[in-house]
Image (tube, rainbow, N blue to C red):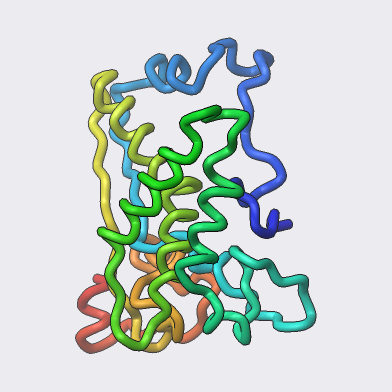
Length: 204
């Protein structure tokens, strides 16, 4: 289940336990992988959309920062984004006396770089982008660079095509796994993906 309002979204992730893989770090494991095999990796432009807004309303517990109730979206402003960064991301146990400087740098970075249309909530988008970066984007880019440095041929994509039929009412972006129909020629989790006309040509 989702860890509401936390930096890391899931309760558990793959770990190197020393049984199957003997390497002590993910870096060592990647560098010792079979670099003769090419690898395809990629991201969509807003991976964490699926975790941003609670689609179940009162049927599920909503969060303050992540898994937000739709009725609460108008209340997501600069103060809430700043609170999330300072209280959740800039952990004083990790950053010590530099925690405030780190938080300020993160807030300034997202305020300077995240752009949205006039109809969408800018700070909701910033929260979602931050969660996307921490849980998806930065790990994927680090792994791709490690593999490339180890001599592996890496093909990396960024998927940004918005299917009008499934466009989010809250974001000008696509969500985690929205690119999968392009790879497998079949809708995955979303019925009736158009495979004809201009959209079909894109998929082909």
